[in-house]
Image 1 (cartoon, helix red, strand yellow):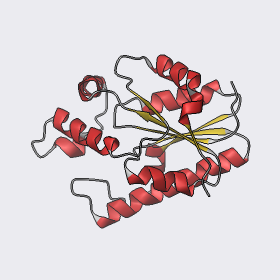
Image 2 (image 1 turned 45 degrees about the horizontal axis):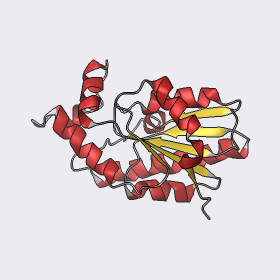
Image 3 (image 1 turned 90 degrees about the vertical axis):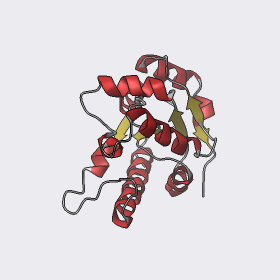
Length: 188
């Protein structure tokens, strides 16, 4: 499959499967690029401030810098003829801001497995994406539910999938089968 070049944002909470699904999806295209939000986050090596509850003003500034660079990088790949699949934790109104920064056609895919499915996945992972959110006596499931609430505040555009009972390959097959639902009207 090779759709027209576009920037695809895949979002969802931690342990929703964004990276696995995004990399698989990009590999299905004849010309696919994969952009990992965590790698953009790790580019700040001096003075990095991570998100916390509540976040510092600097952590929020760096988060939005990461989103801006992700949109620029995705647009660059699309201009070169690729479908650019960018995975990141972008929720709520920040999704609209991200899509508004694109200078190319875009698509949005929201992976939204049920919180208890995410808890099972998170406990099976070698790394914990919720470490900074559960250190103050907050249970893992409560942190996951809070992140799910933030996802719920995302504008209802694009393709939303409950991936609780799906393998990564099944999610990618579903995305490809329902590709037209993910496409967002060009902006600007």
